[in-house]
Image (cartoon, rainbow, N blue to C red):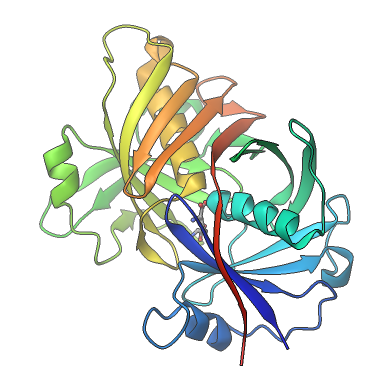
Amino acid sequence: MTTFAKGHGTENDFVLLDDPDGRLDLTPELIRHLSDRRAGLGADGVIRVVRSAAAGQDAAGEWFMDYWNSDGSAAEMCGNGSRVFVAHLLRRGWITLDEGDEVLITTRGGVMPVKRRGDLFTIDLGAWRVAGGPAAVAAGSDVKVTFPGMPPLPGLSIALSNPHVVVALPDVEILEALDLTVAPIVEPAPPNGTNVEIVVPLHDQSVRSELGHLKMRVHERGSGETRSCGTGTVAAALAARAWGANLAPDHWRIDVLGGTLYVDTEGTASEGDSAKLSGPAVIVAEGELV
Ligand SMILES: N[C@@H](CCC[C@H](N)C(=O)O)C(=O)O
């Protein structure tokens, strides 16, 4: 019998499958079936909850977040999923986490620390870089992104543990009208595909503010448009920080369709060793697969 929980982080939703000892045969077919919003449980992704040692993973983090997109493809990392993963481990009693303490979790993108303060979880995603380096920061872009019915727009590629391309739009009306029912075309095509974030700055960019503010939509690799993408909000903040040069803040509020996330950055305009994502995690149901 496999038990599961259903949870979400700013409405980016997941099925969490309990598999502490690594016995589950998790196939792409099962992932697609569970993610199906009519024939299955419905989710943007599936997370197998397994001890790192049982999954043959780096044991520095006791638990491995085995993340899969709804189309059955594996991903290196999921920012929203990491908070829901830790909330689930706490609920199961598989870890304890005092206020302000951190737990290390293993992901395909590396071992990362997660802290909890009340209902808010913070993960440090670690090293990041503007994929095209200082030259891309200077140019403001390194790829072209085409949405249905629109001319190509400049995009900036951000390498976190997973790949992202960020596009800026001038106003919220254009953002809301954007057709994300099909994947945007990115040229040159990233070798492993990419998540695409589209942002509109909402803060005054003509002065240095303490807190940057973006509105964002996202088309996720392997899942289509979702109501939030945690790593995507971090990529969006890093791109906006690169575009804003010395007027850009290190701290960001990002409004997504499913709520609000916060990002704390550090480093140069093109690379750094830390990028922190903070937001809520909600477990809504538990059950067992039949
Ligand atoms: N929604 C996630 C990202 C999930 C993985 C992504 N679709 C990929 O393939 O890289 C998040 O909150 O970061």
